[in-house]
Structure formats: C-alpha cells, structure tokens
Amino acid sequence: MVPAFSVSVVVVAHRAGAALGRCLDSLEQQDGELEILVVDNGAEGDEIEEAAGRRRVRIVGTGENLGFAGGCNAGAWASRGEVLVFLNPDTVAGDGAIDALAVTLEDPTIGVAMARLRLMDSPTLLNSRGNVLHVAGFAWVGGHGEPVETAPELVDVPSASGAALAVRADLFRELGGFTEELFLYGEDVELAWRARLRGLRVVMNPRADVFHEYEFARNDSKRYFLERNRLVFVLSAFSWRTLALLWPVLVAAEMGTSVLAVRDRWLRQKAAAWGWLARHVRWLARHRRETQALRRVRDREIAAYLTPVLDPAVVAHPGGLGAMNRLMSAYWAVARRAL
Image (cartoon, rainbow, N blue to C red; front, side, top):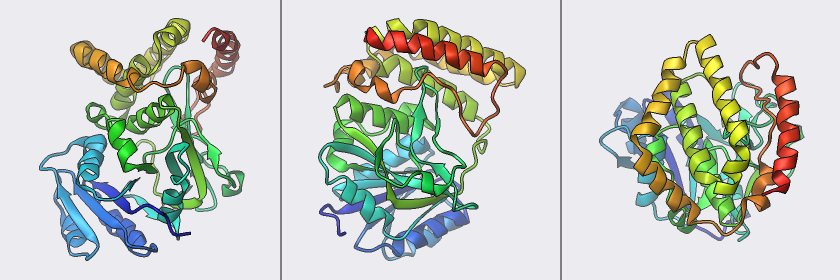
C-alpha cells in the first residue's frame, strides 16, 4: 500500500562505521521516494563521506555530538516529509517496512508506530515487539529472544523503541520533539508517553520488519543515562496524584538500584545521576510543566500500560525479585483504583 503521507527517514550517525552503509542500502531499496537524512552527529568519518555521495541522501551536520535525542531533532527540523521515521544506523529495514509505518499513521487515533524489531544475527527471533514500561520508570525491550511468530498482529504497546519508530511530523513538533537534555536513552519512552497524554495510541506494526544489531551493554555510560533519564521521566510524566500513590514503589526502586549499583560497581554512575538532577531542579520543574500541559487524559486512562512486574530478558535478575514482583503487583492493584 502506498502511504498518503510523504516520508522523511532520519538516521543519526556517530561513529557508525560500516553499519550506516548497510542501513542506507536497505532504505534505497524501499518503494517510493523517501527523503533520507543522515545526521552527522559530530564525528565525521569515511561512512559520512560515503553517505554524502548517495543520490537520495542528504547530510545534516551538527558540528558536535548532540546525543541521539538532539541528533534526531536536528534531522527532524531539517526534514520536509509529513511523516518522520527514525532509524538507528545499526538497523536494516525489511521490504516495505517504511511504507508500512507511514500507512499505520493514517489512522488519526495512532500517534506513534514502531516496527517489529528482529535480531540481526537471529532474524527468526524478536529484539522487541514493543517496549515494557514499569511503574518506577524502568523500560526494557518486550519479547526479546521470543519467536517472531509471537508478534503477528498490530498491537498497542506501552512504549515504542527509538531504534525504528514513526510519528507524524506535525505531532512530533507539537510534542516538542525528543527531549535533548536526555542525550541518550529514554527519549523514546518520553515521546510515547507524551503521545498517550494527548490521548493517542502507540502501536507496533508487524508488517514493518526492521532488523537490529542489538547489544545491551554497548555504551560504558549506559547505566548513568538510564538511571538519570528514568528519574526525569517519572518526575515529569506522572500526575501528582500518581506520584503520591507510587512513592513507596519509587523509594523501593531507589533502594534496590542503589544496592545493585554497589554490588555491580556502578554506584558512581548512580550518584552522578542524582547529582545531575540536583543541579537541574529548575529545568526539571519547567520540563514537568511543559509535559503536563500536553495532558488531555488522566493517568487512570493510561495506567494499564504500566506494569508492576520487573522481568527484563536482557539483564540478570537479582535475588528475591519474584517476591518483590508479587508485593508490587498487589500494591499496584490497589493503587490503580485510587487514580
């Protein structure tokens, strides 16, 4: 099916290497006339020079590393398409994937659509069928390692993976784009929640298959960004009522992550996340006001997309998690009624 919207694809590249060319090859094999924008995120290399020589590719230079969020925004603001598709450079778009994402957004009730992400080195298995979102702000890839056949239909998901997602350009601007202060990780969670605050759906479309060279621990500073940005999300995305109801869960999450940080030797990164929040209280207050200003629905209406159960498939589970999940589930079942 030919989409009714014109499409711009944004690929942010920072030391992407040969993976970028592989991604662009897959885009050039898609049907239709796509606008392809490669954001040179402050790390010029041979791959950028090669991309610049392609007829259908336009290079957007930033002059510095703006992070994934800032790089995506730079590409989005320079684009001309009615639909924006954001792809990681370590992905390969399957046949018809870009059109399928664009067509999904012809439904006005849908705000954000993600691809069905498959593992590059094991394409019969999922990387993600929609990301999971915990009541304490933790997010992880849903269905990781499961057979592709377990995700056969278009389905509403708690959050969309930024590795391959699409959004209408006018809505992206209305939602404020990605939050550049997050720099890396969690910006897709925020965008999806902001769309939900607008009363819009977030979906995964299995007709859009994208293959992802996924590696959880690729970035040495990942723990810092994950923890910092999780706290930014929780403190800005939820209503005051939800935060009041969740305070025991949030305190328990902070205690638990602190224990893990000591055990696994990333307490310095955890402390740095707290330090950043302390130094940016005014920004956080403003960010919260801007996020809440988007609200058209109450948290009660979207609470079903939050889970009290921690079960990420890509990390080792700490001891006692089963008991903690049962306790959290019981508490959340009561708290949801009070939203």
